[in-house]
Length: 81
Image (cartoon, rainbow, N blue to C red; front, side, top):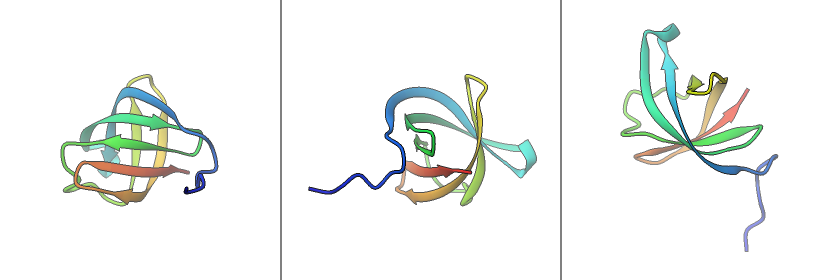
């Protein structure tokens, strides 16, 4: 059994958002699949073109500076801050 590695527990959510890069000139649609105070799991069509740091702009108005912790072909795990 693996121990929880996260600093804060995550809640399952299904929220819309955008990955914002190039000072807002480029965006990628994403779905926030789970969320905590310290990070999130994002579902994307493709990770191609998405850098290791970006801003997450959620549809509810919240914004987070993100650093990629891990990624697969269609999901990205990010840390806030």
